[in-house]
Image (cartoon, rainbow, N blue to C red; front, side, top):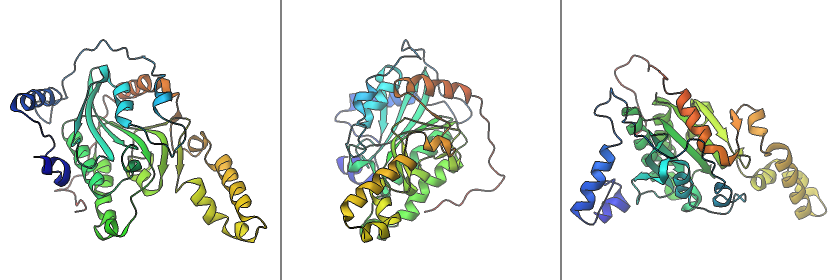
Length: 301
């Protein structure tokens, strides 16, 4: 069981005893509709919709290079801190979980900076794609929390077909007709940002915290490419590099640059994230979208 829960990804859950397994199966079923034509069951909650989450300012460091546990962020946002994580022990650099917000079941896809810095790799892409498809099949709205530095580089990933497998996540999001809300907490770099339900692939509403950085790459890497000649010709290359990085951040990576370019709909106060997401879910509750008439899609394999 451990092999299939941690290595192969065959098992979504693995438990030590039958009693715990049955209890968790019941909990899972309580979040799913009876069939694909019904909505998930709604449970009343005493957790206030407008509960402020000031603790998020401490949970998520402003420094984009510092790790943190995204699961704690999710627990702070959802009803009563209750989260059912799917494939918890496999591809831990991405979190896929079911939870409730204002009593409504939601599917949450989130990067996990606490493991491999939250990068996307082959396994994470497949895990996320499968979960998005499951949510779409059972009319479960999808909330995506982004803090992704990009796709994992390396020969093994390229030889394993990271582009092909990464496209599975892209396809799953583009094919989903349920409400889709994305929130950028910190980094959103490169192609990984695109496939994590960016506005350009059809997210219904996109929010960002003031610490967001939407770019092809980090300021240091971008400055080395864009200002290569100026840095090489300078009397003090390191001082010039530092100056160019500072200018790049000031002009192209400030908190509201993404909103100015139309990449996000609003920049929100982190403490008001729960209230904002619940309001967005309510607005999209009656969303209806039809896919083109066809026998079936042609997903990347």
